[in-house]
Length: 254
Image 1 (cartoon, helix red, strand yellow):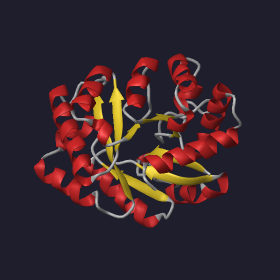
Image 2 (cartoon, helix red, strand yellow; image 1 turned 180 degrees about the horizontal axis):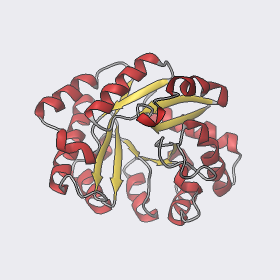
Image 3 (cartoon, helix red, strand yellow; image 1 turned 135 degrees about the horizontal axis):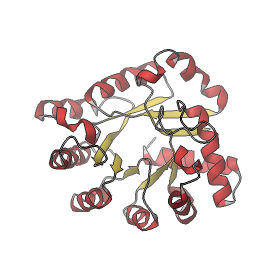
């Protein structure tokens, strides 16, 4: 069944139909979903969701754009919650220079601290990197992130950067962007990379694939991403689904 490695079902976009949508996934061949912590509040909400739904797993962490809220007390809270059952990674963490706040210096500080947290609790990491390719890679190399393992979520760079992360043992998260007409670089990456390092993700409610681009995304749209990978790699769609599920289970140690 399809494994969605990166979703945000705690988002307000799902407030009106969250329960019915989540209960419908199994009948559409969606078997497992990892809900991602992106702030302290979304991490708290994720912990509640994974208790409620057997097929949901979660991560704990703070997105770079939210790192202004972090302090030592909250880092200790993240450490404690990372021990909860069904918490499978630290994330999403990293750098995001698309937004002007918080200052890159603050983002870097808490990126390093959260990488160190992952090392302490022996969990893989979910990496967010937007308009920050060099700094993200430099920090991950300096902090020996290859010892942690994990995934570069919503991978958006070219083949050379993909090679760097693949050489470090990371998986690359591939979602709806692959279906966009202007996704030439990402299509080149999917053609280049080993198929045993590809994992499917939605980043829902964001980044719906064509033909739903611009509308609310959900795991129900992942067959369109699997189909795009199938065409690029010239392998059957079911093989894409099987391989990416196996990859996701290795990634999250399930």
